[in-house]
Image (cartoon, rainbow, N blue to C red; front, top):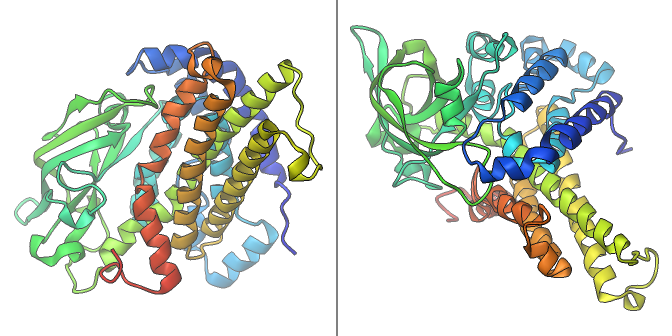
Amino acid sequence: MIDFSTPKPIQQLQTVVETVAVNMMRPVSREMDENEHAIPWDFINFMHTAIKSMGGTSMAPDSEKEAKPDAQADAERKKHPPIGYQRLGTLVEILSWGDAGMYLCTPGGMLGSAAVAAAGTPEQKKRFLSRFMGDKPVFDAMAMTEPQAGSDTSAIRATAVHDEQTNEWILNGEKIFVTAGHKALEESDGFIIVWATIDPEAGRAGMRSFVVEAGTPGCKVTKMEHKLGIRASDTVSIVLQDCRVPFENILGSPTVEKSTKGFKGAMATFDATRPIIAAQAVGIARATVELVKEKLTENGIEIRYGLPRQKLTNIEREVIDMEVMLRSAWLLTIKALWMADNKLHNPKEASMSKVYAGDIVVKITQKAIELLGPLGYSRELLLEKWFRDAKITDLYEGTGQINRLVVARHMLGYRGSQLR
């Protein structure tokens, strides 16, 4: 039987994080939006301490179980079902309810650490992920997109050349739209994951990801973007010019094979992170639905649940439809996170959750503005901000169109070259 109850550890997390969202995020949400690139250090320092006390909530939860024999791991999972990704998804949903931009300032491991967890060796995981439990907040980031390479990762032109004399990789190229790149490289002892090719002639088979640590010569932040939404979070451009990193900082095999196994290993990062983006979308959508219902109640309008649809007013139908979309998105998200926790192959489910959640959060925030009229459009409420914040969840970590392709390929059994 499927159990939809929330595990007790997650219930305890909800209580703590909801307090943070209500008391530390909502009161400064407008201020952080209007002062783009200001860093919410009070929130960051508090979350760093809280995350450490909870044992960490990086994008590599429960990774230590991978080293155990299968039989032992299976017995452990039956006794204590893994909930690391579900816990992280819950944390993200609540923090995004508080403020989506400030959530992206949370230390403790994000997309960069997810890449290490997906494709790194046990030594690399210990070396890079343990730093999130240090005395100071640490950030990480993923540097994939280039001026000529967005969704089409085969167009990446950044290169990594092995210098046999020094046994180092020399990276050259330009990366754009790097979320939290400034905090990872210039505000903490963090790192970024740089996607580059070790063999331009090999196509995707030559793609690898490299850990570039803060302070590495030849790696420089060159621009901070001014954005429509999530303005509390920095988004930067980075130039790599003869940037040397240790040989052991490559994630995956340094040998180019005919298969795209190395590329697929790196792409597995998104099987864990796309549901997290879906959780972010759900958090924004939930905040919106709750606000709409609150304002309707203040004006004497209550939703009459249980009546036939034809007996409801248009406003009642609109709100119920919003709630249905919200609950459906969360169920898709939880399923994808549960599969990640149980190490089940979930690229279809991960993309489905992100496609749907990224779609409905835009619809819900837009409909909310329509229902509340001038009040929804004004700056008196945070609703117009949530509308601006919502769209990014449909864009980063693979656009809605790209994720629809991923879902279609898995459902129809096509390879990427067969369905574009």
